[in-house]
Length: 352
Ligand code: MRU
Image 1 (spheres, rainbow, N blue to C red):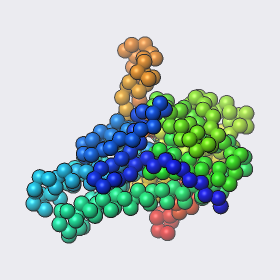
Image 2 (tube, protein in one colour):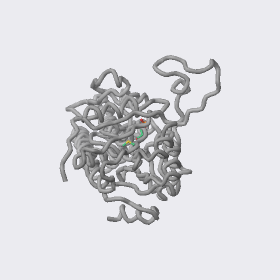
Image 3 (cartoon, rainbow, N blue to C red):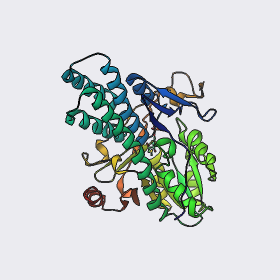
Image 4 (cartoon, protein in one colour):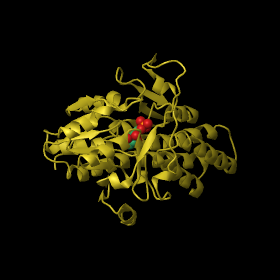
């Protein structure tokens, strides 16, 4: 299989700070920002300077290291240092509620904090090393997801995607767009249709940007257009990411994904979810238990700082929806493509 390399590195630990692409500046600027304190990291996750489930997981892991560096300066006893660091870790895990990768990665750091017998300085080095390891693993996992996913992409396919599950939602390469990258390496006739993804327009601002940077053909459509193009036979496959997948395969992803899945089912188009196992929350039985983030009303009432609606109109703005497992053709993971019955295939993937 041909290799495809994406040069985008969304987040990276450098000596004493975390460097990340500032995703609030797209599409006009592609800029990096250095995050040097735990609170700055909390704010970066909350305000979506960094976003996308796997990327905010790594951001959370880096955030724990930043808090540890700050606490080290306070000359605490080791016991107080550990106690306060665990509290800070819990704080950063709450920056956004839906993507389980954030809690998952912070939990990995908490395990180190709880189990290490080292002095404070060495413990901080252990946390840094663990963060770095998770960064590199994320890219490797995405490449595996990409290669498994490429096997189900029809020749010359047009793949519809929603939101951004690309290099910019992960450390690099991407999950759903990792599938696109791996498929494109072997078949440069494939192309992507990107849903705009209101309200924050991750499809328009981020997916079109990163695919264009890599020379992968992409066409931008608005969210309501997908059924129109499906009916015309212009979409061969849907591939999206996920923020949390329940034990029965129900998958939370950016608001609007569920609508796309229903349209795909109606038109007999395969609908795939691409995600690492760290996105699967086996503690929850179904999507009903997934907490859906409520976001600011201004995301709906305004575009680029300009109001688009009547003043005082009622607003409701859930950030995610849950696609029921019945609508999902397969879940593409680093362990292979999981198929229904998901309760069984998910259990097996964790045992393998
Ligand atoms: O609100 P966002 O931009 O963080 O939402 C991102 C998504 O919904 C992605 O599809 C999901 O996190 C998967 S990223 C590989």
